[in-house]
Length: 511
Image (cartoon, rainbow, N blue to C red; front, side, top):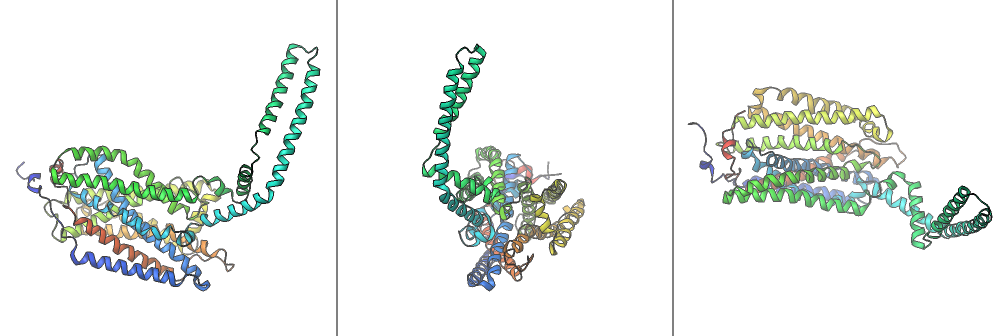
């Protein structure tokens, strides 16, 4: 045991200087790019010649926010997983996971421009306007038909009452001399007719009730998809979910990170127990929040399309690429002189294994979703891939997703030696993050051209000229702000949980 590290020697932790000038350069670059982006957005608004480009910028901002949201949400996932599974090896890197996850609330703030009515929101999610138009049409039709419908119902009630009176008279006549069986049949028939009349008489003939009935009937006829999804896809529910998801994800990481920092200060093992128990309960909250978020933000870009594997697919990408980001962040910190005494090549090897595992998992989920949709061949499902198999996007999918996102990193990560060489592993991680860029781009951007140009009468454009540069500008804006808050979080506490009861195990990990 002579060569083992002792956790007591690291009880004071290791502080990061906060990023210094780099942190503020990132913030200024991010804010500057964001200001330029929204100046262009406002300048092109209201002009018919630039309407498509203007609306297309909404997709640019969504792309940038979602890309970095996946990294931050992945940080929350790794924090939850390490606590819930009582992982010992990852203690020295867990604080980096917590810091990455703590950026989530700031990304929800950056998402606010997407949710205001009449601006980016309506350009992205067509169901808002489609639902409004369908309801407007349905309400007009309901108002037009209201009195006629009421008169028709009253006639039905009167007709039913007359029919019942005739049947009652016939029944009384037929009961004379009827056998017990005939009597039971006649009485049962009479009761059935009485129940029908009572049901008709109980019909609410008020303006509100009849209007609601007629509106729903016309709404279903006008847009069946939105009518069937009206309980989920309505503005009130959508905004409620946005608030609850942001509070849930923020609350999860805030709670765990707070206890982790308190553990550094006091060394009390109760915080370790609290984090482990809470993480087990938070995992379902995390899963539900992330699933509803990507349903509302990404799957709803085409409200007629659906996939039951969508949440898992986006989760796989978030877990994979947040691990890639953590590997790069860890390496940069070590090159700056931090964590050299606590991080070993064994930690890199383990993180490389996780990178490999989630590379395979992402590919498995991506292929499974494609295969099931291809095999079922249902129009409402296949349209997602048909759009992305058209024009440039087919080449994009084969080159960047099939080959670049899976085969190349998979082959490299199979090599044990590569996973123990920080430079090579970082190269794979950088490549993976670039492929994630291409993946999120492929998910969001192909919806832009068809959605914004299908009504122009000049044919559908699958790529909107000029918007590629706003995509990059938005990405730079969010990247700078994201980088600032990551560095800010790193400087707020020790770079590793210095008084965690499992620190010994992590310092001396072998695999």
